[in-house]
Image (cartoon, rainbow, N blue to C red; front, side):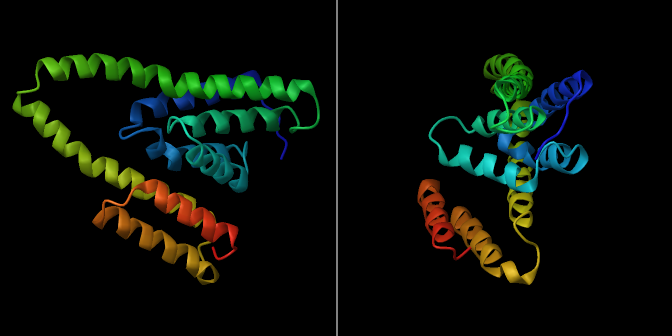
Length: 198
């Protein structure tokens, strides 16, 4: 997939990630539905396959959960440069996309988190602080469910993809009802995908 990005598009990429950073309650992964809407549906900077592959690769790799944002920015930049094998300029665009995406997603939330956590720690006994923490739990869960829905629906929303939907429901139930470590579930999904069952 190849696309051409103007300076205004690069600025739009940065500002979009800046705004998403402030909405990333529960981590950057909770903003995946809006990232998909912007990068795939609205601007067509990425295909569904590229979007899903970037998230899957980053989630499987060791390291911070936010790595998928760097891969999304990298892929947008590569597409803007004409693809991976066209020129060294594509690699430069990839680095620019990665830098803008990571700067955008990290800068506002880091600044806000630092200031808010200092204030909340100093005022941890206040009723409003405790109520806020309890009220945010359902919001985070809903955002994670929306992320799972977007990633699963992109793989196929019709009945021919019933094994994928069944696997998604089973994993959601296991996460909800057990203390089974998520890496075991991720590994099981990788094996099922490798065998071609989902």
